[in-house]
Amino acid sequence: MKQTFLLFLFLAATLIGSAQIRVGQPAPDLTLPDVNGHPVKLSSWKGSLVLIDFWASWCGPCRHNNPHLVKLYHKYHPKGFQILGVSVDENPDAWRAAIQQDRLPWMQVNDNKGWNAASAAAYGVNEIPASFLVDKDGIIQGINLVGWSLESRIKTLLK
Image 1: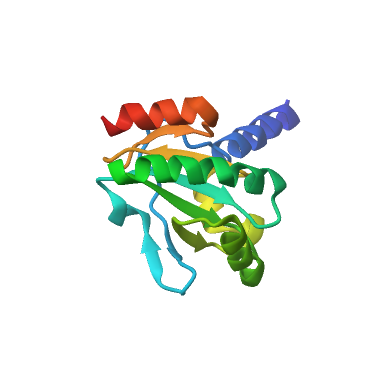
Image 2 (image 1 turned 90 degrees about the vertical axis):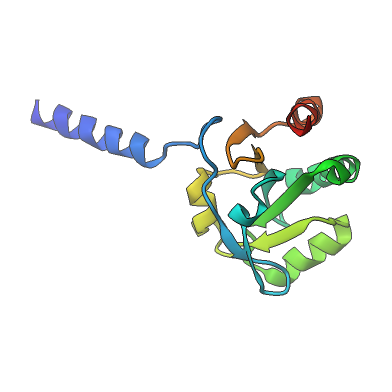
């Protein structure tokens, strides 16, 4: 009986500790260095529709998704859409090279601690790519949306 109770407590603590961010919740604030080492604070973008895109230079699916994000960015940026690329790269040179190779025109920041990155923990990210669509009031409106689902949600939120 005592072992069952202890197992229950352990499982409950594990589930609470790994709680995921949900649609409708405020986006956790982030302050991370950009490619020049200057701090960028997510909350300073309040008033804009922001896609927070967790990625890394070594992540094949992330790099495969980048051309789609570039198209969305060019199409909706003039209407108020922003992307904040949050890299978990531990190698800043590889990160900068990937930004250049993929021609990513949006703000890029790096939480260069890999899977120990505080930003990934704050958003419950345990695999990449991972993305969070944050509305003008700082509320999460979509998680891991892709393709037409992402574009449709962007169009709706920009109205």
